[in-house]
Image 1 (tube, rainbow, N blue to C red):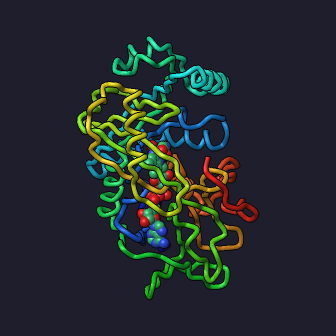
Image 2 (tube, helix red, strand yellow):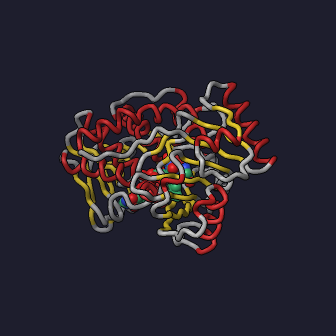
Image 3 (cartoon, rainbow, N blue to C red):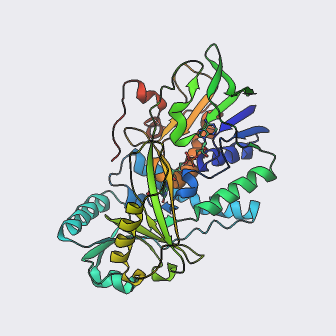
Length: 376
Ligand code: FAD
Ligand code: GLY
């Protein structure tokens, strides 16, 4: 079967790989810009179902299941491409500074431990023994031993190499504007004066998904961009072994010595500029958490547009009444984490399978009556 994957972010590239591994021979990925340079490139790479979710709902289970897939996924990518995606298993330390933040962590601990999420309560002294460069002003912490992180830019490199080595075509600088229809069947895509035909089309177009037309109609899916800005400090990763999370931001150490600090959550449309305000507030928050950063210059600043649906859940599946199309978008703050499981689910749907009940909560059909709303 011929397949078109529109969008070469982590989601599109993972789906292309999953389909190739299942024997699909004719796969083409069509990308508006350069491969892997949008949200997936901007991300912090945390695999943090503990620190980044609260309830034991479908979304948490999806996140936790994808986290489990990462160990074999990283090993397979290393074998297949020689690229080490730097899976780091040191867990996340979620710190509190004020009484209010401590109370919020207590509530989180009660809710999460009750439902079996791996979370440990840690005193300020214990947290500082584990991470000696943490501020002496912290009041307490939670530790999530199962949370991890990867170097998402290496992940994109590995997925690109996998595609190139295995005959998956990648077409860059081609913007799809419309899905081509024949009756209720999607038969490919239209990009300017070019048409690409395929039996199956997969939309993995991130924050831009709602801009694409289905035939002459609007896309019946609401996805908006939510900007995230981040900064980095060179040569500062030695200040923490673990990812440090807090209500004021997070810090992520990288093997190349960079320490990343992020991220803003801004509803500013498709504006992807970086701002001085974000740089200042992120530097101040980072220094508050790790005072050893004081005086250290910010070496880089960037931004990305997270794909966000109004209920903050991913959008994965077929659209009722339309054949030959699968959508996989709106992974919002967890697209790196959710890429392996999304690819598995899409491959299962492509093969005619029905996703289980929890994945059906992410169905594109839930948008028939929703409207745009602000991000949380
Ligand atoms: P993208 O990477 O944006 O890819 C979509 C691609 O589709 C783009 O390359 C785009 O050019 C292309 N495209 C769009 N429209 C068209 C078209 N019409 N024609 C052709 N191509 C098109 N997630 C985590 O799991 N952990 C984190 O720590 C984390 N941190 C983050 C920090 C920041 C600052 C940001 C911004 C995001 C973060 N995320 C994180 C979220 C994660 O980055 C996203 O959820 C994920 O990258 C979405 O992947 P994607 O492939 O859907 O989107
Ligand atoms: N998951 C981190 C972020 O979206 O900022």
